[in-house]
Image 1: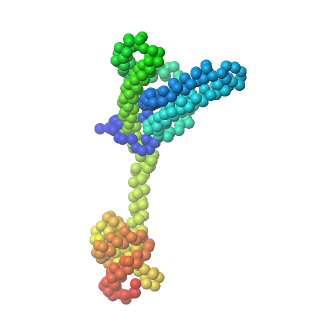
Image 2 (image 1 turned 90 degrees about the vertical axis):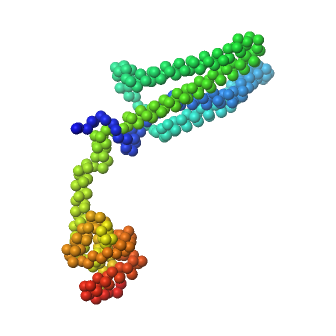
Length: 357
């Protein structure tokens, strides 16, 4: 049965994720940032609101009562405006810093640092009326419309419930002073805004979860996409297999040429094989001509037997040499005694003169 090309069943690879990120295809909820900004703004207003009101009161009091502002000229008006702006900015500074901070934190939390200069330009396809009309009837846009209507319904419900809970105070507000009415309105507005911000934040978290899930689904790969990416990243598997086969054959050819020159092959006995040669006239220490594990070790033993090279089983020595010595290098000093014992035994079997190691 042929594989279904459109069945996305493989998780996205790191390369696909990075490629999508460079194109700006990341999970991001605009509602989450808006809800957090509203929540922080309300909290900061609740905390620093009295200071803002005091600043506005001081400006009005100074403007209406201090005699130095009664003589209106360009210099006095400029001083009044500068003083008023400075006092307002000083009062609003905590709110502005809080809002800016939460915007940066929100963007960093969702997508991290991402600079996409290609997105700055104008995409004329996005403002094409025909393509825009087609996008109106796409399923994601219907889902976004439904989510927007749900937000309107919930926000309206929260506002109505907030007003209903304070209905008695609103009815009796005719007996309150102007300051008391102002305080009641301030508390009511902040309370309703806080409840609204919490509801919007919960909805935004759900929206972010949906956007993340949708992004993960879009990033999943079909069998064909996975094969194409493997070819692009690692090359054609058939060519790679052929290259590995050629490399393996070249390595075996080198081993076949080197093993007949060895004095002994030390084994583990079946997993490892190390071919060693020592010429006391030209070498300061024995060297490893070839080594291998598994299939290569079996080939080393085969070449040694075909060439009449002694094959000895020395498990600890074979393991130590295989881990610590590369092909063409001399054996380490700590293995001199063990290798000398093996060579002495081989030379005795062959009737050769035992050299000094």
